[in-house]
Length: 260
Image (cartoon, rainbow, N blue to C red; front, top):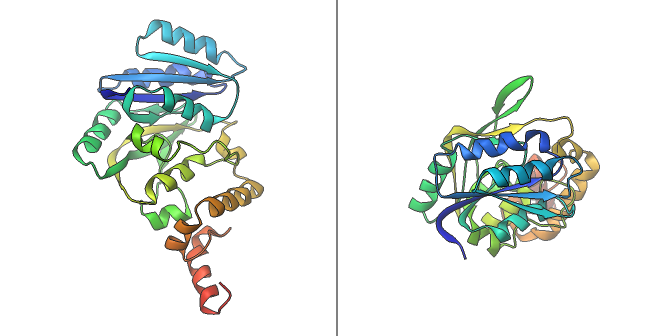
């Protein structure tokens, strides 16, 4: 049973013990209450579970769930199912948020029922410094070509459950992109808050680098086309192509010359 007004921050963690305290501290500094943090330890082989249990013991707002390694989508879904909040915020175990991000995001969701997703401006950071994350403006047509909403956005638990959560069979990366497609393709507005509220950590072993190969891109596009054919037909006049930005023009040309 969801607790009215509560926000659940779902933190999947796989071998991110080095950064986990920093991540949790950024949420504890939030101006919004009530909130809870669900740290889902996804079979880490470092000291992540030990650190998570220490945080749970020290902070009543932290709950730890331990599971065998099953991937980030499964870890997020585990947290979503266990969440007591009406509103969710996925936050990876090495990233951070600004103190006012949750409060300002919740205000939009409460005041505008037609809004399904609230995110903000962001920066990428590492030990070498930080730089703005240049996110493209949102539209469904743009979302059909690429993702511009990072996973650490706010949305209602009911909306996440309605689309079945994150797709656990999407092993080629960018599962957050597919999650936004299925949540938004049949309606719902998106709001980007006009301030930096999310800090994305760049690390040598980041999943984003591992899933950026041409093979993974081809697998991902095939998966998306199979699962959301009607959406791509609507927005791109046909399937998503390897040269994603050219998809609509290419599909339209093929139909014009009778090869669609």
